[in-house]
Image 1: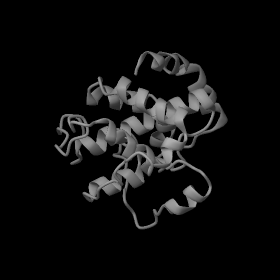
Image 2: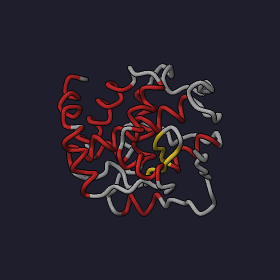
Image 3: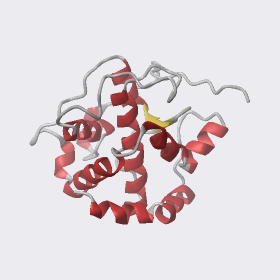
Length: 193
């Protein structure tokens, strides 16, 4: 099988965060900043490189794990609410879906905006903030290979990867799949603080 070619961090990609805030929309950066704040001891989202036995590219555990948790949180939000947690598109990478803006920032060693009470847009959406915390507490217990497995189980990723499409397409059919297939996972989240 021919290797899939992907060119992350292209110049064509540019998010305008002020536009999202003006429209009362949560961004992946809001969610990512909050997730990083949950790892107070910085033992999960580290700058240590992920081993080549996990992925071929050089990527930090912080970048990899943050993107996987964001992907899973988005899937579970679709499952529960029928819509995305954040508006940015997910991009198909060999090891699953990634949010290009977050991936590129961390690849360039740029810091995410630190999360602090009163400054992050996510906190104005308490139910979403709680769900993201529960997703983190649930999935941080899995190893990196399992996170790849979960990400690649997404039929939107599978279709994009198989058809060599850059971004995942979330159709009504995919949302219905999420609602059926991931419904148990959403219910299970209530067990996590």
